[in-house]
Structures are given as structure tokens and as C-alpha cells.
Amino acid sequence: MTDMSTRTSVRDIYAELRRRICLLDLEPGQRLREEPLAEEFGVSRTPIRQVLARLEQERLVESTPGSGATVAIIDAKEIRDVWAVRMKIADLVADFVRLPAPPEVVEELRAIADEVRTVRESRDIRALGALYNRYHDAVLSIYTSRTLRRIHDQLFHLTARVWLQFLPEMDLDTEIDIMLDEVEQTIEAIQGHSGVRLAEVRTTHMQMLLSRFNDHVARPLG
Image (cartoon, rainbow, N blue to C red; front, side, top):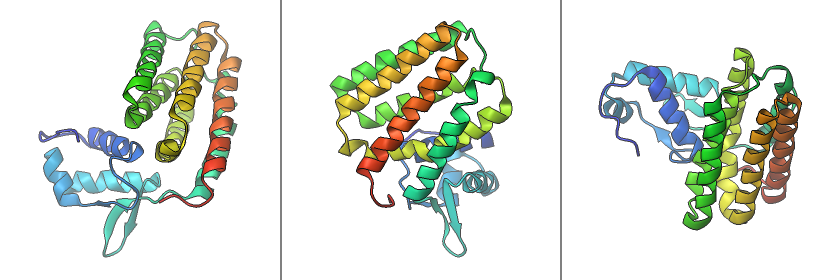
């Protein structure tokens, strides 16, 4: 777990806790106690409450009177609904993407692809999840609409931990190949200045992931 004993901003605390939830460092149903978190981040309990309230609004955290906050349980039906909305939103990417993409975005995507290949040796599932989060951030950075970025980012984080949770049941080499294909096709699309192609790549891979989810998860996850 990241050592953050020095005073940290609310934004940084939010980003860190969301990252831990999406990488399953904080598991569904795990209690989130204000006092230890405040001590870890070097803040009072007030900013921790603010962060937990925001995460609750985004449905990553649940709050029960008398019990406090816990990491939200993953519900299969809700996740399918969120994926359906994400695919609809992906269709809009062609109209709200900045191309040509900055060189640093292409470089980041190439670096991600290289690191994904190393997972074939390390077999580190969590590392693969972290790399997909980086891929999401890189693509999100070329969206021109702040509203689209915000909505897409929130919906992504609702589904990000699902793939990571059922990944141990999947063939890891196949999942690596699929992710590499998505990253490489994304690079080709943005280098070809084609927002339409980028939208097709994102939508196709979301559909593929939803299909794999439906094949391997027949009940709510928790």
C-alpha cells in the first residue's frame, strides 16, 4: 500500500482511494474507517468524509447508518447496464476527440503496450489491471469535451474492478493478447487521425469484454 504519511490534498486522497478500490486493494465489502485513513494521509477526518461522500455518489462506496462506509459490492446487473451505457458513449468519441494526438500520448500508449508484454512473464494480474487504467487515462486525455471525460471516467471506474476480479478465471495469455490488440489498434487510429476508427475500437472491445463477463459471471460478484 502506498505510504502517504504526509499531508495530502482531498483530490489526491480521492484519486488514491479510487485507485485502490479499482485494483481490489480495497475489496468489495471492506470497511473504510475514517480515523486510520486520516492518520495515513495526514489530514483531519473532515476531508476523509468529503472523499468518502464523493465515492459514495459515484457508487464505489456504500454508507450505512451505524456501520459507516464500506467498499460497494459489485452487482452483475448494474455492471451490465453500465457497460451498455459506456458502449453508447463510446460512439460519441469520434465527435469529441483531439487529433492528431499529442506525441506524448502516443509514447505513453507504446510504453503501455511494452509493459503489457512483460506481464506474460510476470503473470501479475494486478499489474495488468493498473496498465489498463493507464490506457484509459491516456485515451481520456484526448477527449475535447470535459463533460464526456467526466461521465466516461466515472462509468469506467464502476466497471474497472470487474475485469480484474474475474481475470483469475480467464486465460491470462488470451487477455493479454486482447489488451495488446486494443492498445495497438488505438495507436493506429490516432496516428491515422481517425476518430471514427477510435470509436470503433473502443466499442468493439467493450462488447467483447461484456460478452466474456456474461460467459464467466452468472451471479452478482462480491
